[in-house]
Image (cartoon, rainbow, N blue to C red; front, side, top):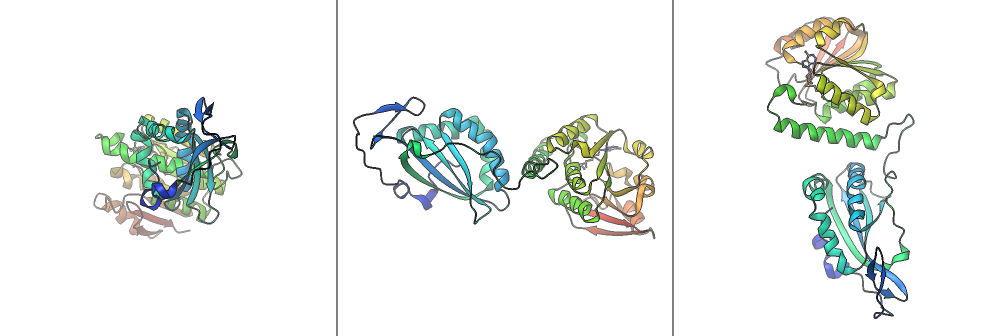
Length: 359
Ligand SMILES: C[S@@+](CC[C@H](N)C(=O)[O-])C[C@H]1O[C@@H](n2cnc3c(N)ncnc32)[C@H](O)[C@@H]1O
């Protein structure tokens, strides 16, 4: 969270509420984790920042998940108190929380400890700041007993759906994997070790197809760490379906299993390790939807194994047909010239070929 009092919209002089009249200023006592607090009208007081945030559209839940799990414990450890989140009933992207300090003198040093610490500098600043559209801070001094301090980790946004999948957590996991995949692939020079995840838009597209066509038997060729698999499995939960996904690399298959576990979707997916052409030969089908996202030189060979396993009326989606159009020319030619198939090329993500197997 930004260090400061809210920028020009919240000048220090304006933000500070008029100090309450101190009845007994000469009687400092010890309170609030052993620190000195002033007495006003025989009541312990403390300094509270009322921090209102407007988060970029659709990101509030993710922001609060990260803030609740990482930032709140770090604040508490330093001795600050946190209460919230309080969600706006008028604006789905706005919330506020309260941050408490024993007195005005400890406010800046405590904040500095957090904002100059490893957690903020190395991790949270880069993730949370880009999600904030604007924020405002009002600083007040109030009787300590007036505030109930607690952070409700699970009171935001969409609830856990019957069946046990926490949608907010799932969205956060998908965002996290997309970001980690991007960062990892930018660093990794060896192609086979890259995650090469589909774009979030493609993930969403796949999930829409599964839900809209009520696809139940789903096959994926090319699992990687399970990013696209999670999108498919999430939708398969809603259709009562199951995903079989094929991956050659044991390391990636292990990552996918761990990520599916985190997503709460492991029971919806079978990860099959091995060379996909071999594994395919042992699968019966029929599948309602097949997603092809593996080694491109074999796409044409896959077609011979995929089509007999796709049910009439089923869909085949192939990734990268725009980004690697030259490499996939023969494959696309085969799809577009098969009288039993209808194929369109869609500008979604890296370019998806959507093929319908005519009944
Ligand atoms: C583009 S990535 C898949 C990305 C994944 N669909 C996602 O969006 O998260 C391709 C994956 O196919 C795997 N792969 C490549 N050749 C394969 C083969 N012959 N058999 C099985 N998997 C293979 C790679 O190890 C890699 O993880």
